Image (cartoon, rainbow, N blue to C red; front, side):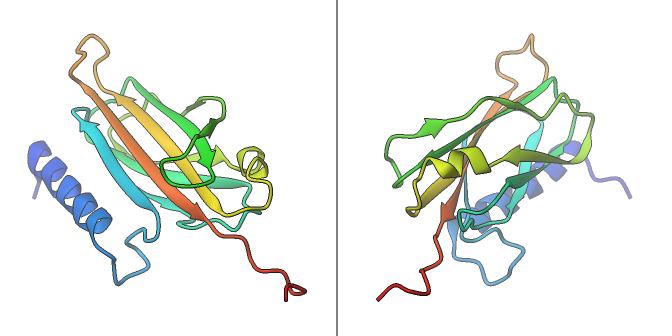
Length: 158
């Protein structure tokens, strides 16, 4: 049985919205990471990131996504900031596409940006710009994912 493309997109968006909007009960939900769709007009759906929380020693984070049609570009702009809504320090652009329809993983380096937090808690983020047909300006999605960075307490802290 073949699921129509628009039904598949609607199901994936509904699942992502449900998981992002409530505190989930399962480890497959992405919590405590948060996914926010700024716009969603490209054939692109975020499946999640792993790990969903960083401890500051992470080397990379993996973005998983689904392309329901060919994607001309998937660009990721990683960033860190000390607090939600605070000033962000961005790193170089990571290209994760173009991609054919299907499920894909993209590894995004994290260590260099995490070093800028200087040992403090904060958040690591990904701003994802996905484009379907480049000649169609309306075929564009922007998604922001934030992952908390929690430093482990020192064994000698009092």
